[in-house]
Length: 118
Image (tube, rainbow, N blue to C red; front, side):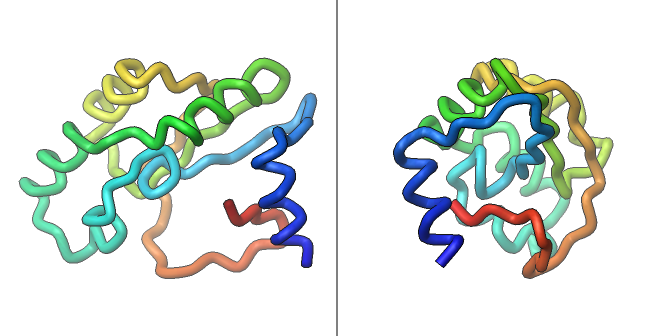
């Protein structure tokens, strides 16, 4: 029931202030389905995909709105090799954030008491 409530709040603008909000990049800020199983993709193909991945403009707009009154922490499974490319993509797509963490462990699912499904 909480998940459904949170989805409705997102569509009606979540009101948060002075929070730290962690946001994944691939599959949240991006809309490239190929990156969902990046563990099976070659390094060279990953570089090409990361450089031209499409932005999820709805989510980016919401994150930018939340960044006005909260701290946005981006985290990604992308490793340090892709740091410059990733920061360029974030800048080009006008994503507002305060900090970014690379090398997030790769997993299929996360179970977390603070997860928000959107």
